[in-house]
Length: 575
Image (cartoon, rainbow, N blue to C red):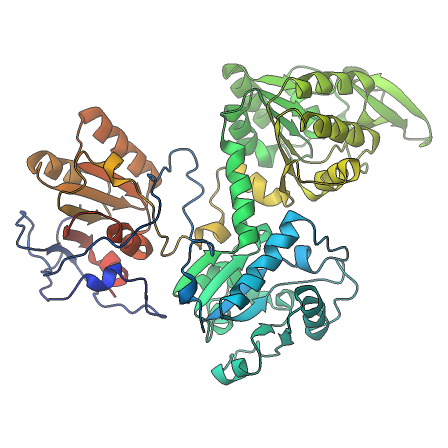
């Protein structure tokens, strides 16, 4: 823990910290220095401090499991609507950021999982007695009927079988007023795509959107890789932010990609831009047993393996990245598969088609589809797999996505899905092809937005997901964390390298010590050190304690006797 900068003496109650009735707008109470909170006369050797006399009793009764950030550091725990107490939704103003591609598309399939989950989010909130403000962006490209906010409100009213009122109030001079909300229970704000402040995540615009709003429910997973005012910005001004049912389902599917219990695990990779996706490909190589390239990236892999390819198929500045991926896969003993032949079209006579071996495509011919040998090899790999992810279109050069090869690949996956094989389909093109071949996506894990998945595979933090890491009700099996979970608990917020916690744990065996640290890598290192040293009264959790402290300490079965905290954290934790 960092040195004490300034001593602050005062008295307050920590009972408030275990309450789920958080204030709607947070207020800063402490401003400078560092402090420690001794409780119940437990004396530890801290310099100065903020004395607190209180008991915090455990009130958390949900099923518990230890927080694990080792495998998915890019995904935090997020609060979901499913977990949030229904009684706290009554009469609250809830902003729902919905996915327009699901609810406003020209062909809304009410039987699909994504549509049913998205609709259920709104209906559930309505049944719980919340007032809703629906927000999203939309375009006439996805549905020519989306003329204005009123037209969209009418469509939503028809789909939901609930009255939706269009509001025209997005203006820096006229924020939403409480009296506006008396007219109905569900409102729709104007099209966010018309406001540059949305994509700029303008703080003033986000505050305007959140005026009179108590809770944010983000149900637009397809925007998770973007920093938007309606997702990231608004979360700062609401006392609770959580994932809707559609968002939760997509997040669940995303996490499945990284799990490797089912083997062999096969990745079918289409699309191009290998250089920008190099980190994602290495992530897949670290998880999968084979990488099968079926798109433009296959040419870069072939080139890295020493095969000659036409210069018009070479991706600029991608050679080193391709070589690194090939070497990484070789070191991991991961099979690298690329097309062995192509159907090609004559650039001068487009109606002419001919099969060429992959390393022998003539200069005047252009690959447009997978050849028969390629499909045979893919079929062999698919039928021997227990887990498959297909991401990216079967597309070569500037040609349109091929149809025959794509259809045959979809047929293989549909057949394999009936053999207890877990299959994840990523991207709207792949999803559409699978649906055409099987008439249903129910046998597959589906993630329609490929951009979000590629960012996740690069192990990048998804802003739309990170913004929901607020007031999460952590579920912790304290009996696993400590040898005796009934001992008094000492919490260090901002535990850093963990030396303070581990040193105190060795000196005071009669206490349990918990470190809360936002840096996941430091937390993993500390947990490894605790395990190696055999310390059983110290534990670390990767968390933003400014928003998760209450739910963590409220579930502890024993007494909370002391909290040490840097005051830049304390200003937000204690309110």
